[in-house]
Image (cartoon, rainbow, N blue to C red):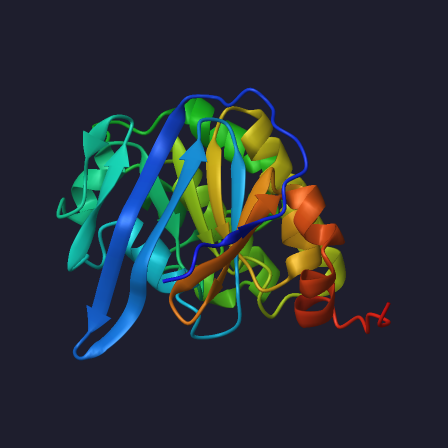
Length: 254
């Protein structure tokens, strides 16, 4: 595998590494979905994974959150090897995953959905619930409604709020902007900025490259299961290859 291109222009002191992915390979039968990728997420960062459909972004997140097991390589979280640990045990370690498609419980109320996010605790922390409702006023307005009656944007807010009830240290988000109106997308990304400012590290999978890189400290670009480009969010956003491939811009030849 060729080495990924690093477009970062400067070095800043790095925070402690929270998540370290080393030479991970994942297979679906005979198909190598991930081909020995390596990357890291530092404590307090927002890191974006970009790429076209089928590039391996969702597979990467599912492997980190314990929904898939790698065939080769290692995953280390806060100094502990976690590949092979079941997903429900990783939640207890502070890794919470908001999957693509939201997956709210349609017949449960907003309140019941949020309470499900705190399943690992013996008692619901009312202060956590209050914080989520303050962060998402629409959920407070819809508190007694069933999750299945909410709009797409409200369901995305509910899915994120439910994850926050688990007191995550590392939050995995898969395509939070998918299918949402631009105004709602802007609201979701602003909330993600606030969540990160509150001390939660974020690993973000997103096809909306402009939004993701505007938010992210660093990013990695995947193509067919390999990392081909990496750098700071700012440098990737300015990179001609990203602008041409993901932002729909035509770059004039020099």
